[in-house]
Image 1: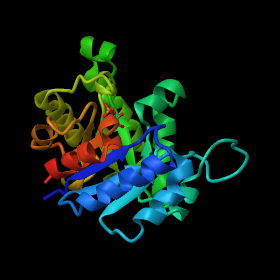
Image 2: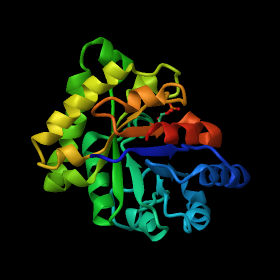
Image 3: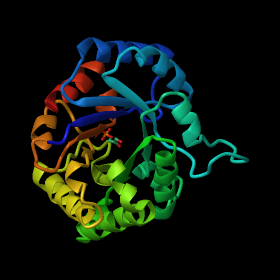
Image 4: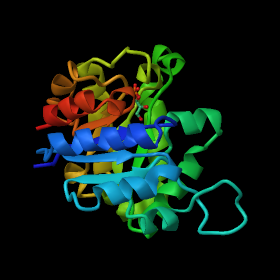
Length: 247
Ligand code: 13P
């Protein structure tokens, strides 16, 4: 039986006071049946770590990492640095990184690889744009994105978390229907099955306008193992309701 996982992706939101309130609200509502984590902006990670270090139930992580080990890469943050601050997870290949920073499938795969080398769990995001969906290219696009990671990680692919985030559902209020999401999750599971005997143990999260009122039905689909939550992860009441929906 796979455990459910709910991860808050704060994106470029928050400040020290708001973060402290949010974390206090999450801790107060826990512990949860599901695994829970928050992915905070880099400058706040040490405070998040301090605030959550006594709480074994809530993990934390970064929203990106460099594909390089160390060196002259101004502005980048390494997987080793995230690991040093107690991160358990790191999101890689979020569609906002792919779109605004021109991250390629191979770069995303390289980031996942270096994350694993530093004992972080990469949360690898895949997902199609609205144009791609309307052109019936969803399957092709997510398979291509996943395939780069499978080829780069080999048998270690079983150690990642996958997040299916249809780009048209992110921050738009347009959630994929449970059937639409399940169809892609099932496809990804089949693709992973060809790469690892452990595909049945891997967590595949759904992301894109998950809210307290739609979380439970999404999470009840056979191949949806929790969520990657954007907007709703910034309010303790909403985020914890979603965490509880992942029972
Ligand atoms: P929203 O939940 O705001 O749609 O964002 C989803 C997302 O991009 C999480 O990574």
